[in-house]
Length: 260
Image (cartoon, rainbow, N blue to C red; front, side, top):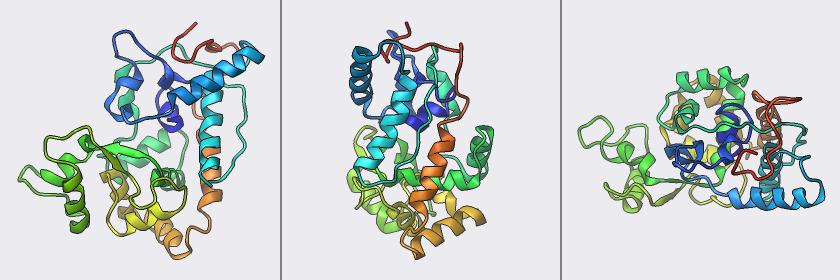
C-alpha cells in the first residue's frame, strides 16, 4: 500500500482517500487487492487522541508499512517523519503505477521517473514475497496471451496448470498468492520462484530479461537472500522520500479517508 501510494502523486496518503463516486485511487483496478486501511485508521485515531493534528496519515502509512514487515520477521528501517497529506485522489492517476503487464524497459522508466534505480526495482519487487493479487490480473497471461488461447511462454507450464485450477477463465476476483509456499513470511523466496519462471506477473518474469536484475536474482538465490534484508531496508527508505509534501504543502488530515 505504501508503494502504491508513493508511485501516484508521491508519498502523500492519496491512496487512503475515499470518494463518494468511487473514483479515487483506491478504486482503481491495481489497488483493489490492497488490504490494511483499517490498521492505518486505527493508528491514526489513537494518535489524534494523544496529539491531534500532528502526525500525517502519510507518515502513519509509512510507519505501518515498516512495522508490518517487522512483524513477519522482515527487516526494520528508519522512517523519517514530517510528510504532509495530499488533498487529491483520482482513479485515473493510478495509471502511473508500474503495470503488472509491463516489460523491463517500461518498469525501469517508471522507477527512474521517481528517482529510483534498477537495483531498487528488483529489490522492491521482492516485496511480492508477501500478499495477494487476483485472477483478473493474470487470466490473459494463462489463457490467451497472444489471442490464440495460449499462455505466456515465459511461464513454467506446471505453474500455469496450477494457476488454471485456481482461476477459471471468467473468474476475475479470486485471490492468488504472489509468492506461493511463502506468502505470509518475509524472505527472499520470491527470487527463487522468479528464477523458476513462476513469477505471477509479466513484471516479475521480465526481471530475468535484464542483466542487472537477473544477476541480483541469481545472487539472492545462490546465497539464500544474504543481502536482501539490508537492500530492502535501503530501497524502502528511498521510496519514502518520493515526491513528498512538506512545510506548508498539503495538510495534516484529521481522518485518513477524507480531506479536512
